[in-house]
Image 1 (cartoon, rainbow over the protein chains, first blue to last red):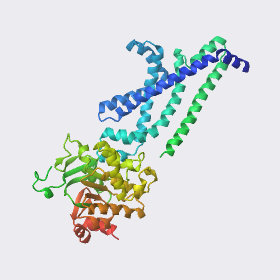
Image 2: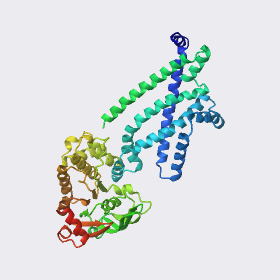
Image 3: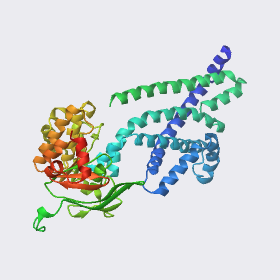
Image 4: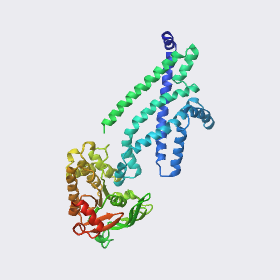
Length: 220
Length: 254
């Protein structure tokens, strides 16, 4: 088994390097745009107008209530129909993952904002600040301390979720596993290598988040 | 409004409250309050918990939206639809029971944030003014610190000057000493005392009866959502007429 593992690394190590790049790229895109869309959704969920709140809430509930794999299939076939100019399966998968992640991020942002004491907003408003001034200058800077670590955790989750995208052979770590496994007629060894890579990525990130969290706490 | 347009400036109330009603769900907290606050007055509101004192105060700057009735501040009905309340809140300072200091800003920034943001005051001018204010309440040496290091009493003194930095025409105090350790109550009351003696119109919800008696021109006793009795401190504390007032005072003045 050791010999086989070495063989995987020697012959196809470069494929895993590619895979890591795709996985990280996909995760970064997902979290970045997911955060933006998610923040927008969370603001919509706190909007004065009931229809706006309803749309955002319905979206979040539907995304959270259906499997990611189903959403991937859905967007994989829907995006080319609706937006033919995108015409790239990598982009379709990105759209799917962004739409999925946004729903979770919106919950993170909402929880982070709601965890800020009500009195903060009342104090800001009593000084004559309008709603957006209070939100931007008083509430969000405090909410960010709750949001940031949770957002990094979402990044860890997304790294693992991108493995589902290998269903569509988009070049991530699991896609490379499937390629190598097919070429060498080996299953366990390339799987082990892929597992170690995923673990190394997520474990390092988690440790980094824990440090970040401690520093943010110390800042209070 | 200039005094020339206003023949009787001292007789026009700063705040007029008319038939104010407010409920939370099935609970009627305010059941019709009509009251005037004149410029220069210092009004204390006393009464048992749940009598609607704080809700009444919070209706004055619309932190609570009344279900019914009017609040007229400096001649403008601020409860009317379409009124930009932010403009009027700038002239009503509020001090909260739990201080509500902004923890992510320094002591100085806590004061300068609203005037620079809302009134577009130049930052340098505002910082000078803020240091002067801090000096008045003995916090000038804390200006660069984050409020996490301040004691409750210091936080409340900061909250008071934060409100004053907006140069309000009236100050609303919502139980300003109720969350303080006993040894810090005095320092905060002292600041409020200095302020009202300098002529700041104030409405103070308080449980500090001795303080209310000392600084107010007028005391309102609230019970079950109405003003059950009111008068000078001598009248209300010395010879209360309403049996509810008598009962309440006999419980708190032992």
